[in-house]
Image (cartoon, rainbow, N blue to C red):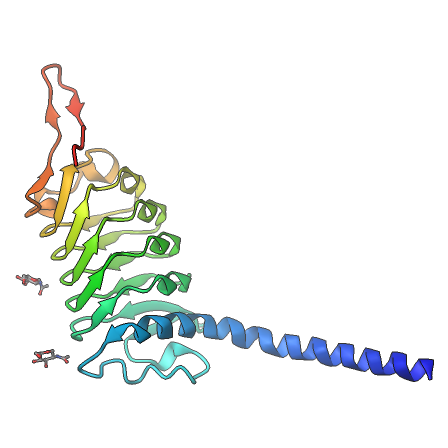
Length: 221
Ligand SMILES: *[C@@H]1O[C@H](CO)[C@@H](O)[C@H](O)[C@H]1NC(C)=O
Ligand SMILES: *[C@@H]1O[C@H](CO)[C@@H](O)[C@H](O)[C@H]1NC(C)=O
């Protein structure tokens, strides 16, 4: 009896290992699809632009306006001008290979999730021409790969967080046409951004030089 029981146990154990091994790649492949599906559930899509987003597919790489790399990980999201409404889902931060987030010219509202600071491969964060509100999360200062940040024509409020000054690769910034307040940073990449990057934020101002040539950076907002 004993040898049979042990043999049966071993068989069960190896079957369990096989099941686990079989399950792992699929779980990894679905991580990006699950994140996008969570985002889509909160969206209004009157034009049916996201009709091809079938959560039953093994990965989202054939979905409309989704780009993947050779490992079937999502690197690009290009949702421009689709009349999408609803909110940016924190789950989008699970797309850890994402380089290009282009969610522009829609009717997206609500805040930018602070979790977006975890998108460590992001090169482009383009959210312009929506109705996005609330503050710019200081966590975006963690996006060390970021080159383009265009969030103009929204309803962003609060100050420009000092953390953003740490984005040494940031080449293009557009925060114009929002309701930001306080003082525009002047160091790091901010040495090079033109005034048009900040235009039409009535409560935003450049720091003033005091009598001895020192910037007064009291934000007062
Ligand atoms: C967006 O909505 C406008 C006005 O309702 C309509 O004319 C246009 O075709 C829509 N575009 C898309 C991509 O659904
Ligand atoms: C964004 O919206 C503004 C105001 O409605 C408009 O003037 C501008 O052309 C839009 N930007 C783009 C790229 O369409």
